[in-house]
Image: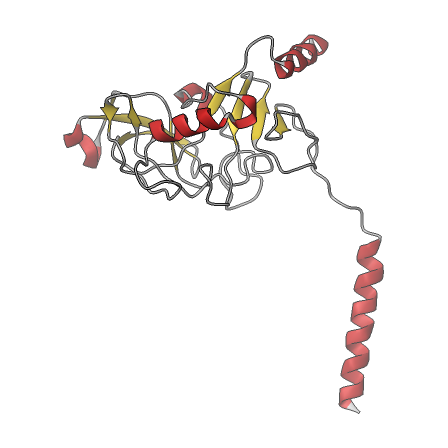
Length: 223
């Protein structure tokens, strides 16, 4: 008897959930005032489409690299030491897409050879560019960034292009390092070149680029 009552209760609960949630309105991402998802081919996507490989930033007229979780060169878990030309510390990061190098210069070279989203001028962002991505988390515990567009950004330090930054506190004996933006708390810090930090690359667009034309038309409509 008790078993029959339990089965009836479970069936009734399941039927209620089916009827109730089948009529609930679906929640779709809304367009962002600044960001547009971009496919690997360079084509713009709607907010609810995917997958996307880049994000177009109409405020800065740049493309941002989108991190992944597929162990490719764009995997969001990889970290890199800061190294550009002969400055910094080569191969002090933690990445598995190749055995020889793991630093910022190597990631930039691979991404430009790949031609991510049709671009071949990928680089580290400036401190101002990267810091402009900081915004309040959409939910508690998430990074200080637009998570719907930058879904694999970690709560940690991300390298900028600014080098020769004076180090302080426990790193003072190393004298100089590079600036990094922390998306855990929305701060900017100077770190030793040898530190393994995250990276998100940026690619400036020319005025003749189709996405730049879209941005120009949007700006003229706002004025």
